Amino acid sequence: MLVVNELKDVKGLKVYVRVDFNVPQKDGVIRDNNRIKAALPTIEELTKKGAKVILMSHLGKIKWKEPDMAKIEAMKKANDMAPVAKALQELLPDTPVHFVNATRGEELRKAVDSLKDGEILLCQNTRYEKGEEKNDPALAKEWADLADAFVMDAFGSAHRAHASTVGVPTFMKEEGKPVALGYLMVNEVKNLTRCVEVKDEDRPYIAILGGFKVSDKIKVIDTLLSKCDKILIGGAMAYTFAKAQGQKIGSSPCEDDQLDYARKCLEDAKGRILLPVDSVITDNFEEGSQRHIKTVDTVSGIPDGYEGMDIGPKTQALYASEIAKAKMVFWNGPMGVFEQKEFQEGTKAVCAAAAKLKGKAFTVIGGGDSASAVKQFGYRDAFSHVSTGGGASLEMIENDGHLPGVDILK
Ligand code: AMP
Image 1 (spheres, helix red, strand yellow):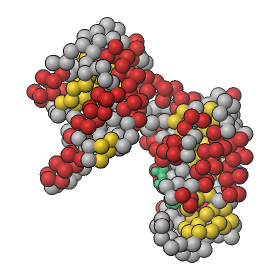
Image 2: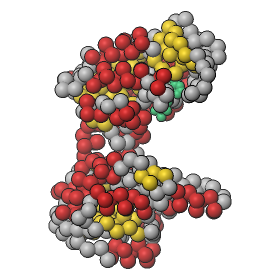
Image 3: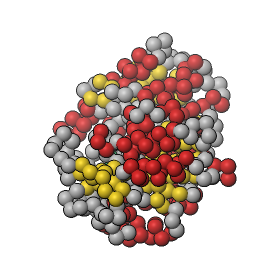
Image 4: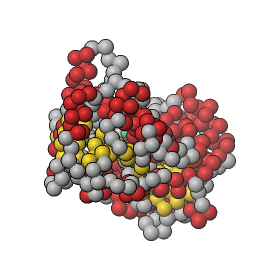
């Protein structure tokens, strides 16, 4: 696969770069510009060489199934890309950043044509187009016709075969235009590939899985079982496994339709799946309300009216001792409701244990809430790689290193 710095004769070339500018924002104020910063090395590689850079990204969700057009317009307004252009301009004060409030047609074409060498054009949110998520060929062709080359740098969207991610490079390839990976993508692909093409020196390889739903992670559990030495399970999903083993889980979250799957997983794993041995529980989920919080061993079970909110101290110690032996760690999903301070300890303990491996093992966070947790608890720099895409990193592991937005560039 070609990398952005290998594109030839870039000066004056119109380069379509698919970035992930899906930043958290409200009322035009961007709360976290990390995703914009993460795309800068690729953008600057191109502008410094005199390319005309056309940036495309989605932002938020627009539910096109909504029958009320006024509601669709409101969703569009809430996900306007214009403030992102301002934020990008602040990060690149010496490069002109233009914004075009269009996703198709004359206005977009004119904005592209008036770009000068080394300048940037950020287009309106790709999801303003109904055909984006359906990979509509006419839309993809129109976008592909705007530029002379394609660069994919939106790892967080690489698991989605949309018009802006897969449709555009498909047409460009057919027309003999070059397609390449951006720097952010190269880094993600390299690090996550190491988690699926496991070498002997990376063993023991431990996966840590948490978060809410077992059903979201079924395929990844299957794949990880074939690759890892052990899987440590925490978060709400642990209670489906606990119930499958016949334990009493009180009113903890549980997916009853996944009990058979959980049983089968545990059988197949032959002791390689570890479950919590104790839990921090509460009789009321609501933070700040009157509630009781206590720790129970899972063998004694969770009483009725209580739900499991975090792994307990014995589990923290057990998981820390397993992590200490690892040469490679892949972690996705918090160990408990880490957004509430009473239930942060499990996630913090796993962060601290994995952070101790710095310099001794290869440690990867698979995006999403676990990435937020390591940043919040101050461990970001202790990890070898913190992925920018939760869904994409899980899908890449599930599909043995394949993603639609990467495979199309091969
Ligand atoms: P996911 O998106 O599947 O990774 O799930 C992350 C969410 O799971 C976070 O918002 C956590 O608060 C939540 N979570 C983790 N453990 C629990 C639990 N024991 N009970 C309820 N929610 C949980």
